[in-house]
Image (tube, rainbow, N blue to C red):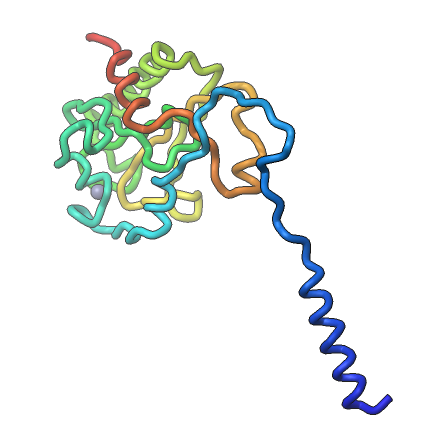
Amino acid sequence: MTQEESQTQEESQTQEQNTQRPELESAHDFARVDDGFERLWTPHRMAYINGERPTEHAGEGCPFCSVTAKNDAEGLIVHRGESCYVVMNLFPYNPGHVLVCPYRHVSLYVDLTDEETLEFGSLTKASMVALEGSSSPMGYNIGINQGAVAGAGIRAHLHQHIVPRWSGDSNFLPIIGQTKALPMLLEDARQRLVDSWPRT
Ligand SMILES: [Zn+2]
């Protein structure tokens, strides 16, 4: 076989392999049980991927500075305190995932004043009480990712995550699909928290 013939044979084998790829099957005929859950719907995640990255600076470029200029429903704000506020996380790990933030554009927990530290803590507790009332979590992950190395998405403006947890809430989707099913829309989740917010 000449070199040319050998090349031609290789090319036709490659073409054959390409045409032998299985076609995607429709899911229509697969066995299934309707489970009554809302469908996977994460438009906020796409907005994040397509959107502009927040800046390091205070003011309009920082989502935690600029969100407070919006009204509560628009900005998904659950509660406004004197020095700190609570807002729904736009990219939640679980339904009811909220963030406690100081109004001031400070990066580090040690930058908080005593007054801010106190309210940062009391709003964390109040958020948990509201979550108990609205969705009875079985547990929580609470914490601050301090600095980019620790995974802080917006490291310039301090924020504490409060993530309610339920048994079996972590399924294959975050690993396989890089996304997660969220059965409750953010505005609905915010309203439930507002309704359950502890009265002082
Ligand atoms: Zn800020």
